[in-house]
Amino acid sequence: MPSQDVIKSPDTSRAERVPPGQELTESFPVLHYGNVPKINPNEWKMRLFGLVEAERSLSIAEILSLPQARVFSDVHCVTTWSRLNNLWEGVPTTALKGLVKIKTEARFAIVHAYGGFTTNLSLQDFFAEDVLFALKHDGRPISPEHGYPVRLVVPRLYFWKSAKWVTGVEFTAEDRPGFWESHGYHNRGDPWKEERYG
Image (cartoon, rainbow, N blue to C red; front, top):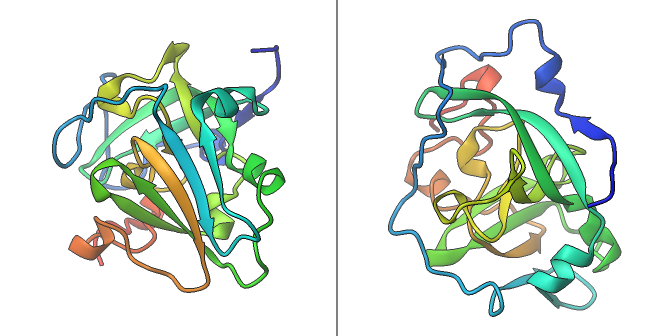
């Protein structure tokens, strides 16, 4: 990857970087529902669909050919752990705007992942400058337990919004709660407001 500036997630500039009710950890806990999928990267695809002029499906080679970015962020899990000083590398979500024409009535991105998992984001949150499809974490490829080959990273929201094992992005006019949001989690998940549960 060519050398480039690092995008600093705004929360890393706060005087107090740990949100209410959180405790620091230096480890990187693995939490998810179900088993870790075995994904062949040569068969993996990410589908862009919904309110777009023409659907598109991206291979891992096509993802790797897109403009890359590095994002420095903190991670806050709804289960009350926080991990500071993470460096992510991957494709900014804004790169999708050059791949598909999103219709003007679209207001939300529903992120799809293996196992039927989904999570919902407003387009404002989805296209924030520090949001990316991560391929690496702290200089190493994302591990299978953490979402290999591609995971979404949304630094300003609780970490369940950072879907592992992404398979698609659906653009919609109406909001549609995802897996955890349908099981009692907050619809947005701002850690600084402790938006843990609905």
